[in-house]
Length: 420
Ligand code: 1GP
Image: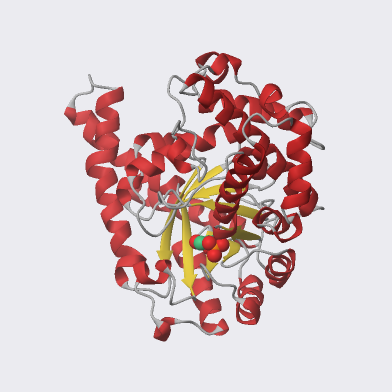
């Protein structure tokens, strides 16, 4: 061993010592996943999972959006989802379920790239998929990006640079250690988790400890996707949260009420993740909008729309109120649900009216939130109107307002915006 090697090893050990101290005893938080996030909305790019028409209004209450799904996720629908989220101005977390979903556009748009590793699944879900992703990054994604950005670089430099950039991509990524506890979910199917693989609270704790201290997972994710974990999940969260000092702990699965979300947070989750309950808002909105069009017609006055929603929509039992109830900072979910459903109906009828007039909604310069919504949707603030205004301009590609030249992909809505 040369003197240089000795010095390098000493420096390496010092760096690791500082990192271990920062993760365990020092009052420093080096975890890139913000501790303040307590509510994350999971938006599934899958074509069948729709967005509410005025999704920026709902998403302004959540702390971050996670883009990802277990099935039928493609590079196309992933990129479209990132396009749609841009005007919502909210932190976006990308959870790809396959390496090719990490396109250049997706990488540029996401604030954090999250790499799932399932602690109770098959070997593919723990390390095989990661191996495939690493190969894809090293041999395709990064070299292509370098060739586009720095085409003049000689191979002798481009190759080691691609190696460094690949390692940096992984160093910057957030590693999510999943414990999948619903064997009937798509997540379990994809990860090879059967009923025999479910963990006891103690086993979950042990694997979470190994994930934090050996795998360096920034996040431990207790996943019940599609079903509420109840007492069992609360017990696991209680055990795991006591054992972790640096990793965040998230819970996801079947949340659609204040009570259940609060239970998981009280049990020890740093954040709850809500997926299906958000997508159900879109399906409900489509049904409400179509009913309003049949009963009121597209040219209805704003006041008539408000009265119709009050009379004909049971907001207390709505999916909109259920989703908003999962967000701890929303003090009165029903009040917001009433506003947003009313705003959606007004917007949709206004757009339908325009479509009927013009056979296409391209007259972006005349599309503004105030004209479509009116100034008087009870409780919609100036900031809400500005958000919707910016979003509508992006939706219909008014370059002056949004900086975009292409319209947003409207196939992600449950309501139809095309002329019949
Ligand atoms: C799915 O944990 C998330 O990965 C959210 O679950 O869709 O059941 O809300 P739900």
